[in-house]
Image (tube, rainbow, N blue to C red):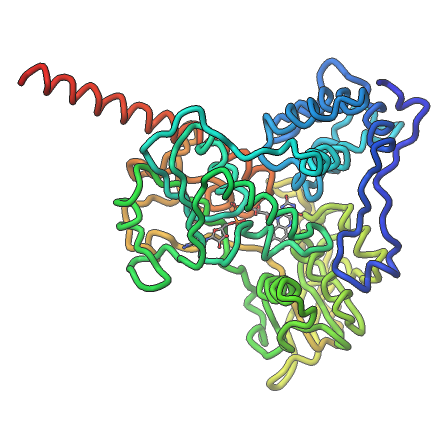
Length: 484
Ligand SMILES: Cc1cc2nc3c(=O)[nH]c(=O)nc-3n(C[C@H](O)[C@H](O)[C@H](O)COP(=O)(O)OP(=O)(O)OC[C@H]3O[C@@H](n4cnc5c(N)ncnc54)[C@H](O)[C@@H]3O)c2cc1C
């Protein structure tokens, strides 16, 4: 260990931009065993590991780096998977520059340890070597849990609950597991085999998936009412994510060719998964001038998808500057390398066209003092209008929660002021008895690593609730028998 003085940082090799623009495969190559061990050996094993402290899962990072460096990979895998349900996914798509790697104490002068790449290397190797085995609970319990949503939060909760012996059912309106991992995040960041492999692992562990079922206010061929779902299970876990798209109120927002980011990404992911890389023409950027409005990770994913679809030009319009962007700097760099042009400090004033959009009218902005969130406020500059040609405009303004109490006819399900599900932060319980919630539907649009953490922690709370319920029913039975 401590080799950071002599050994330089090496991130996994990136495929050249000219090559990766032509396909949707992941852009990073995997570490070889030698490279993973060499990079893990750079860890300084510091007394207070800030990487771990700043990881939402508090992963034992220095410990599994040491085990990797010492060629004790199976132990590294066991330790890594003891705190994280899907380390190979976090290793690929966590914003490490803001979390573990950004807080590595050797970061300042020597560049951080490449934690994410070693993390996915360990679990990918574990799958190849057959160390990832289906969950076999010590005892089987009769009680069952219905989980709504098979995203990272729902899947993480399912794994823990199954370990504890419960009968676990996951309901999802989509046709496969993963939520945004499968249908939002593009394959060049996360290939879908990685998620399918986890779905298979959960199925082999005895978890039952009910795909193509939307939880709603009534029963039909493809819907199940929330009220009836509650009757089927001893506890319910809501992990439905956030899908209501935010919009702007500028003229022309409903013109043809002005589309929503998630609709665009879902269409692209579905086309790729069906073996056809060209989606519906409405969502195909080929030979078009594309403008993506927004500066988060969703915007970066749209920009880089448009590049791969063969767009004529791809521009990002963002009202703040590069340093105030909410998205990961690593993704901005990848986008720049692939040919995206960034237009900083500019906001849309109108989308122009008769039936179909043909340009954007934009206005320059000036940045003021930071607001409560720490980001600089935006002021529009008068007399600074300009136009940009656009055949397709993609709006990437983020997401709000859908109004579940209304959609499910369950007014007693309480919401927070921002419209997310209100929970007791210690117990993850909602206002309804036996109903728990976690992930984006509680936090608002967030990160995969937080969704995994919520799923794991909520599962422990559901276990406590069901164990107490079981204990009470046994005590009641015993009392009745004594009376008789
Ligand atoms: C384009 C994009 C890119 C992103 N990139 C990153 C990234 O690089 N790194 C990162 O850490 N995070 C990223 N995120 C955020 C991350 O994907 C989410 O924070 C995470 O997926 C939330 O997990 P979840 O399980 O709470 O919800 P989701 O992943 O949204 O899963 C919710 C599931 O619930 C199902 N569902 C919803 N309502 C119902 C219903 N009524 N009935 C049945 N099923 C239902 C949905 O079909 C879905 O499968 C990105 C998000 C987007 C949109």
